[in-house]
Length: 382
Image (cartoon, rainbow, N blue to C red; front, side, top):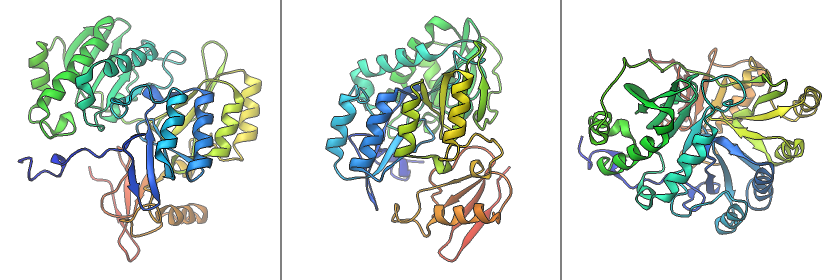
């Protein structure tokens, strides 16, 4: 397919904090959170901005980021982000798409990848050429459990032992093995290669023979049989006991929307917070008594701690009135279906206002697509 025939040959318009998307309900600004990490004071800045400048809500994205809709003054919002340390690089702000295992260093895994996040982020921002990477390029750092590798990033590391990592290209293992200490530097070098070979393509899997070309230019050859790392994970939900005797609480949200008032309460807990690519939030390192109080107070306010909740089976695009292309108020219709117990399909389902199916999660998902005259049910394809 030639670049002129490929819709992805157009300039990348992926929104950020500075390059906003003009939606039907106003400007949409997206804040990158490498590794999904955000401090309480930073979350408070976003909650206050959502009230003062936006629609009063924070939307969690499938890349562990946060976006605000209907932003009335994007420049003022950017000033607030910079003051809070959420905009460390003006030139690279859309490139900082780094997913990391949310429980790493606390529960399970071969290694603690949190240090990798900071190292990779610093290396990306320090390389002027990498500012040219598309805002859709995704880095994954997996501690060995397979949760974020399964999300199909472009470039990643996957721990296979405490001392060794696999280099992940286009979401797959290609048999490359590296010492843990060489992983982030090699990943950064792979990013530079992707910039050189991508042409007009946005993602590595769209580049003809992309993974092989990356390996050839890096001078790397397979040293082991490739592992199948494609298992789908729904992400953690509920009460999670840490080996140190403390607790992580993993909570889902309807459609991944965090009201500013609920964010205020999360901040007030004064414990580490993570945002996940499953549009959930994690509160870490809680004493059991504090964890019990959080569940008691915040579950009625909208945090979902039950992995079997029907609200965690249903996702939806923005729909009307936020999207001009949408043929329906999909979130309103999906909410009515959940409340009535009359969902059009069992299991995981994604409601879309048109055939673009924006926000659709990976894996086995039934599509509920607005047609202008009701909805069409498209079962998962094998």
